[in-house]
Image (tube, rainbow, N blue to C red; front, side):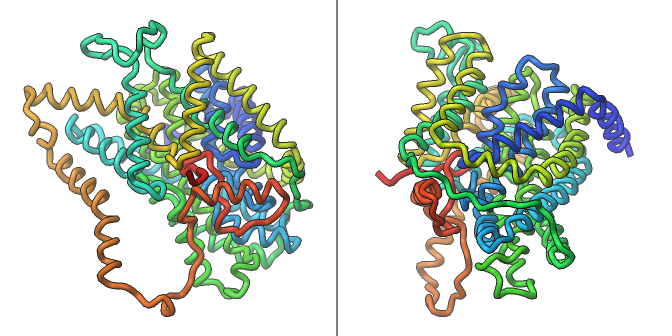
Length: 546
């Protein structure tokens, strides 16, 4: 009951005319940027992060919540109309959504995506209200060893499940941890990795790093593979759903929500697995299985609901534990750090007005998202006609402006360029971006918990596993690392005849080639294979094979 009272207070704060305006602008900006080709929600949030700089924190986060949900929805439009997912979690949407669009049902595909996003987002946010306080109560009881173990698990799990090469994933994590060390040691005052540059004593600003890695790196990557052929856009019409469409969609919306929220709340759960599970489930349960692969509406409704429910799920560990589980949550965590606010168990006690206003604004932003996107879908489709050179020139301009606005230092522009080139190189050689960003954010915090745990044990290393929860978490971390090797050995010793296996659609196994294929084919106005249409720029980054 206390949570409901706090939520009502949050609605009172979020529903003021000025905050409603911020929520509306956030949803509008988030959707407008997220709908552009190749731009996923993480890049949209990173690009618009400087927009909230200098605002009052509560208003800024209400606007940011709108940007978050708007960016999450925007990727479905490009997936459906262009067969170009903005991130890996919308690849499944493209499988059926683009086929529906090509058969003249783009309106129904966009409508079921929008309504499914609303249903899943609303239920997911309600679950956030229910579970976040419970997670906080549990987290407050944890000591430094347990908290360190959970952070280590998050770092290892996120790194171990991304990309085709675990070595590249851990190399990316190492880069992020190294960047997080730049500046002054918080305990001893020793300068670390500043290379004689006084402006680096305070460390690298997370906003500058996020904008450089996501926006500048992606713009350089796209420019390197740009074709000047005009895009082929499928007309949208007025989004609407018939009675039969509603009948076939409402159950997939609920099932997708049930898949998405738990996976979003888990470290490294992400949205890729629940969207795939939702697609496979709908194909098995559908009364029209013959339509799958040719434009089944269930194949859009279920995965889109799973994707948005996972987005709400990621906010549970991010707010309650300070642990981001995907790139978008990592950029949102950067926004908290930008305002000097530390997400974690004490956030609900130290900043209750801000937290509950943010959660209430998620309900408001989700409703605004539906009201805006159903009538404005044809207008978003026209944005897709922007020539790519103009589009990415604009992205570079706003990225530069935003990075400069953080500290009004020309030095930040040099950092932006250097890290932007690093982001481009990582895409070129297939290094995932997410481990770098999460390593940068969690690295200093894990270091603080490590030192606290060692201080409590007088330097005895056994103090790192002195709590039962810490031991249990380290065992889980070991399983996460050993499981892929175990499964590989199991498959070798128990081979299955290829003919007996029913072929099912799968997530792209090689994001490196998938990103480049999708980019070149869609820019050329052609339709590529839906399963190979992942665009680099968010959690899983594509790269050309060296």
